[in-house]
Length: 90
Image 1 (cartoon, rainbow, N blue to C red):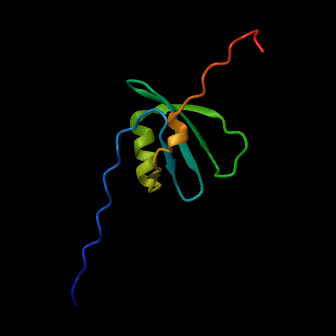
Image 2: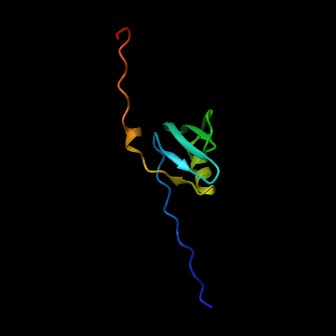
Image 3: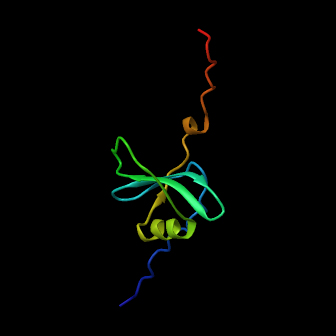
């Protein structure tokens, strides 16, 4: 009997602002990244409101690894930020 080697998963990419990680029942969006802490939103896929949370970088990376998270590709619309509206003008 030939033993097959399990396929290796790609290593997790380092966390960065604006990333969206997809998991089986939820998604995690990184909003801000500091030296030690991460501000993130974790919620169900169809959630209307999601609370902001803070956690250490290590704990978030461990959570993503244990839940087999997949990094979603950045959408071109997310990269563009709308121009700030001028106050008082019509």
